[in-house]
Image 1: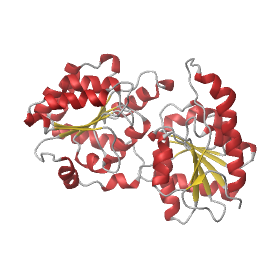
Image 2 (image 1 turned 30 degrees about the horizontal axis):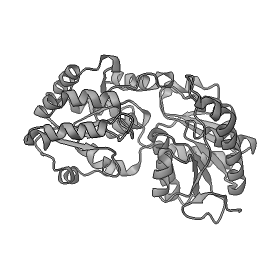
Image 3 (image 1 turned 180 degrees about the horizontal axis):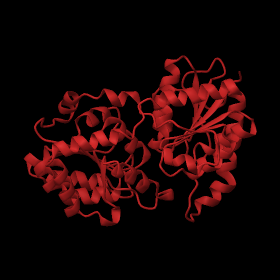
Image 4 (image 1 turned 120 degrees about the vertical axis):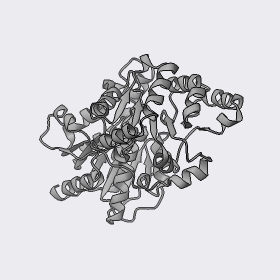
Length: 385
């Protein structure tokens, strides 16, 4: 096999069984990492093709998976000048990069996890007539997967309702896999790491890797009444455009010492996420596919504030799905105020039995063996090819 240009990580001495394509966000990256972990446990090899700057460009090499970065564009629904460059330059270059990499790798199957990062690889695989398996994480299928579906031999969906969106007989409900390490969190480790009070409930606030500006603002205005009833770990991001991290650090410095000890501010959460989930009584978050899946798989009650304007309003659909099952409460961003946030959080924390029931209801939406189901689809696809 010719070694593909730009490969980082362990060298590939033989054609990989699977090329994984996707990223840009944690929601498109985490399922691929879960599948890659299981593939390697079963002695199947894989290589990942992703973007140069997305979440996957850091997380995949850290996991020891061979990685190839290619040019990628972005599928924006609203007008932006970047659309021109992406349409005329980045997207075609991405397909050419993908074709070159796939020709050098000779994989048995390509696994697309969705998003604009996966699409050039899926199109390249279609040109080379390679078997393609797609995975859709959200309740509302994304544009990239809807385009790629016409070339896929199999399509895996997280929720049964998504299956009707694809005009294909090869749709299977697999669920959304969870990274195995998130199931092994230690409450004792979290208490020691973050100097938590074991007697107080923990609220985990997260807005994704870059944080969520509106959530950060509202939590800042609500922080004192929140800390009177709970302790908070706040993943705020470090977006220089908003300056939220610096403002929140300044706010924490003004709090009375007793309350400041209850407020942990972190820009990004890595391996310690498992510990946080093991300890959190309630999660306050956006409703992206990754976070929703993690909360459902781990049985965590949540208060979701969906990102408005997301493609297909997918985050609202994700949140409503869990809310209908009784596993979450949703507040539209337009309605989110400090007073409303405090009232809802206090109400939920005041009823631990209700919180436990919500977690159990959220868990009913999860498919614990999703990674196994996806690996089975991949192996069937390359054996049928």
